[in-house]
Image (cartoon, rainbow, N blue to C red; front, side, top):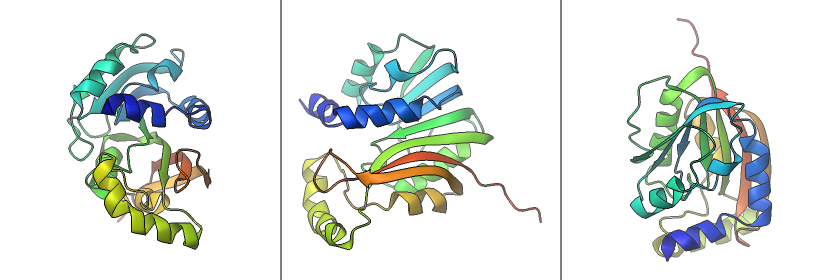
Length: 200
């Protein structure tokens, strides 16, 4: 029941439109962190994506994703965002869609994403998090302790741009708006790239 509920919530018309829009930017060797039931797999462009690896801790969701793995060479791996089982600089693109809200340690997860991205790679994100409206943010903070318990650890109030930038990534493009996923959900979609280290 829970995998089906997650899929329904994360596949509304406007959310799917955002997925289509931003996943068109995925190319090369691609990793999706939190692949879930594989909603993004049919959206990949086989002319742009050479291979795809999906990581998720949920066996039932990975089983559903396997049925959608038809467009590009695909591997599905059981694992967590905080400990990605891949070498550094392994991927050209990392995809993160409606995952950052529910990982145990978002800072560590993003640090791992930064580690496995190539220096010229890109993080493609379609996420939800803290509202920019202080009134809604207060409600998000009040509700998150209860909401996270009943919704698979989903947090309404994580500051997506701050977390991404703190991980050593620079947001190159971003749209933010109210989301139809929930009256208390605020959407963030865009592209982030590894920040170049300063020469010493």
